[in-house]
Image 1 (cartoon, one colour):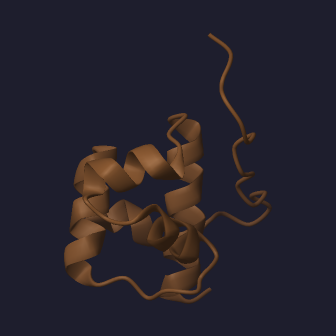
Image 2 (cartoon, one colour):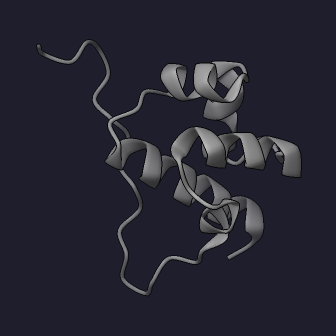
Length: 86
């Protein structure tokens, strides 16, 4: 698995585990929401500076974004669209 795929996998996995929308992560990392979406779809190749900002916004070490998934791990599912119930 290449680095771009690992970043996409881990970014979505961590974001969804924390219940963060792409929009809220984008605001926290000072990047456009469409760029977050593109990274999760492996369309964009982020810079190291952007990976640092994303890691800081997620409260993780940047190396976590490059961890290879274990054999048998299911791909991270997207969050449900729409508003969350209160």
